[in-house]
Length: 182
Image 1 (spheres, rainbow, N blue to C red):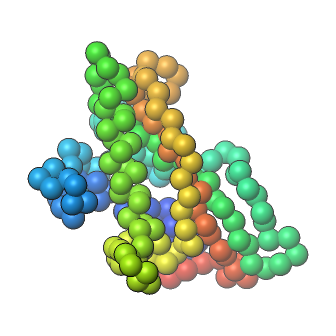
Image 2: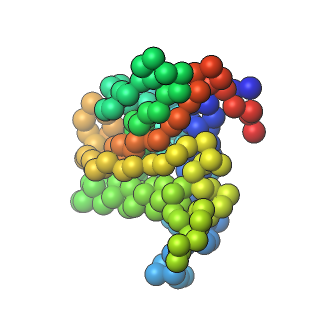
């Protein structure tokens, strides 16, 4: 058994590791495009600091230091929460237009994340991408907050980066906050 939140973090990590040139079922408008990133080994969770051993581009997933909507369980034993996570992306450097690589990495990350909640067309039930739908039904939904793209050379990173806050709908039975590990 594994903590449900850890299972969600692991599933999200694995999902984002799918940002690779092998990702071929892109939207029809992108026919002929190839994903320029290979993040298959470059998505980290729960890590604040990175050194020279980690090469750009890469993603990091962290729990927000303050939850925006801490509903809690109150007197109930079922906690229904909007769990805020931060997806950070660190891009390659571009001296002339420092934010361009971060905007590109952000767009590919947003498109990948959209697959988690993309519904079947014409009123069909379930996910357009069944294997990715709601991270295997671990979560209820994902809501996206406005991402922020920043130039590097600050206290966070030498290269441009982005923050992409997301709110994950998570319902947990506090008497059994574990799930079967995949």
